[in-house]
Length: 226
Image (cartoon, rainbow, N blue to C red; front, side, top):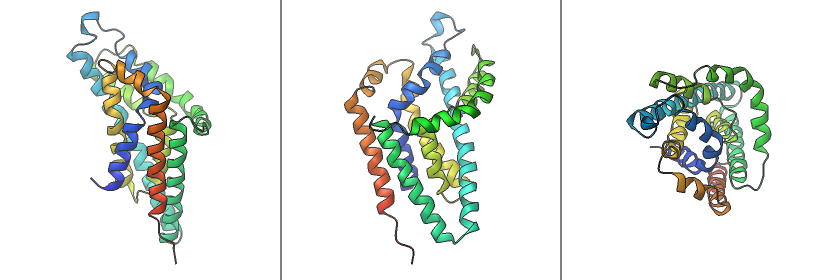
């Protein structure tokens, strides 16, 4: 795994505190329509897995678009200079993401609000899939909910702009999605204690601080264009 993919995975993992707030209700909705005896059974876990696979696939599709757009921008101007600019933007957004996760700055909430304009048109598709009664429905619901306005996802998409191409952008967002997977899979069962832990200010600040560190490392690795 390359450093960028590993970094994206860790960012998704550390962003679990945000995922619990944004997607917790959706994961809970997967139990609607299921008999009580099935709520914690293998069937429930199958629905959760299908939902998350759909969600990660939608992230990868968005990453393909962002990676392709970044490649077009790089080719439109001086290649090395454009790549440097995209990398600087990605690093700055990573720092903003860390500030957001740590609760020090809520600026990315405005980005989520802007994304809500598009979400209003997509969200009714998700509602039609409820209650979820099959893995196919759960998968499709995940694909819809993957476009939910989220500052964490949007920041990683900005990072995908500098990934270098369509496939690289998709892989970066896929690694990020896999990083979010443990928190969301565990949310339906044994992670009650984990959820309360991640909501504590200290845990949020540690996660935010580590993401800021990633952003600073991205910026420090850049070399001046001669």
